[in-house]
Length: 219
Image (cartoon, rainbow, N blue to C red; front, side):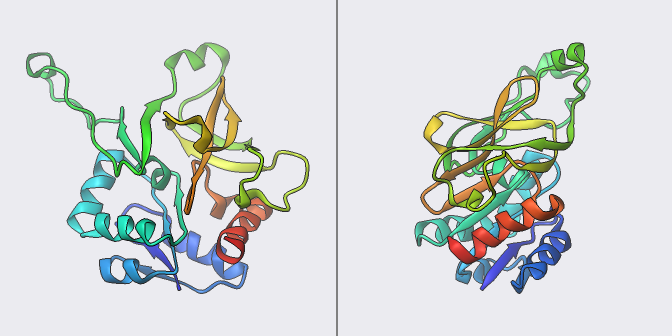
């Protein structure tokens, strides 16, 4: 059973419809017990890092995600679902007016499945004509051996992105693909049974469907 985790912040139906196109029936659920029983778990997400962690915690889904990983069952994070796998994020809520008096707010903590921090694209990208958020189609150059990208040919495939922050892993060996946007960043990560993409495979046409098929059929 493939379960798409519903914590109120994802393109759930878009992911479900993409899976249906490759012949995979997936259940959308916000119940921890359902997520914990999944043969494969997908954690999508759109929005702010801290809000996502709060929503996961309030629904009791953090332990369900960790249990899935501990049991060796495949997990796929998408966009914000990639970012929450890391230890912390530079994305913080809008500061109050008297923030100087309060001092620097602590960074919101993630699941800590992967070591590293989520960081913001530099404002200096504007000097090179690059907008933040990074939105639209861009190539992802796969690392050798990552099964998510099996059968996609020799050319780096294009995927659809929509984000202002990206993961900076401590361990370079988890980087499964890189994308250039004013410099290279990790656009996919993989370690053991944990996989995640910064781009949206459900919005990425043929390449995205091929990636989802690899996840549900071959991993």
